[in-house]
Image (cartoon, rainbow, N blue to C red; front, side, top):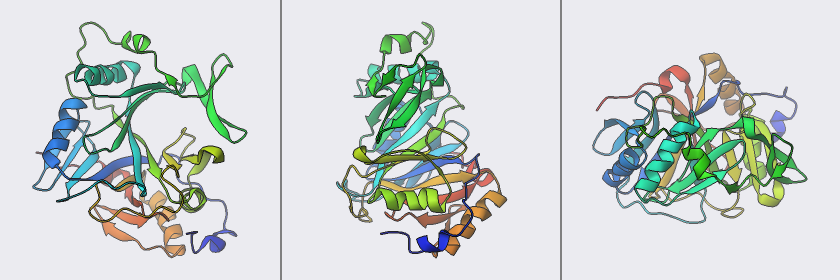
Length: 315
């Protein structure tokens, strides 16, 4: 489904979302709240900020970046739109090493990967939600998109597919002997980006780039993937059709993504985006201190202003 107002946007000046825009809280529907809370606190070291009977907020000890909502009888559905993974950004290789060491100590399956420009590991929570843990390493190289493909170029000019096995010995060399993986994450850890399953790549780009104003950082049609960002970041949102083209949205009782937040730095930036959303004729719902809009594949996008996004309750 293409945006109904795509033709109405053709004559407008090219719009770019504010460069300080970033991804904020990710909200998940979960079947077992207690199990999920145990995993995120003890396996990943997240801080529990607040909890009610059916939901909880977790983060870095200051800011919420994950909300879990209990949905009784929630199930995992395949070949639907939604979350591929959310990505937690660590401020240094040392902090990422602590996180990866913790996973190995707990025998949690994960897949350390060297993207050259970033160092990552991938895993799933107990309900199958994809998670990436990563840190930036631009001194090692950059991402490249050439001839319809994507990969990386090392600082010395050598090309890589950008999906090499991470050198764990080198990573753990940043972890002093006296450092331990058990303590909770630092306040500098944040939500870095999100990667979505969408029903149509062009429709998704029409929304996130053409309407909201994120810049296209790369598109690889043979791999059915594209990446968009604000302010020149390598990507804030990944988009893929790996679950199939034309896939439906999940049922209301589905485990997984409920919505994710896009954080704008001020009211002026918010108003600029909302004006375009309203002009496009899209429905907007006020909730959780922000404005909820659905992308063409029915993924929930919660537009929020920075100050309102940083508040959380206390346990």
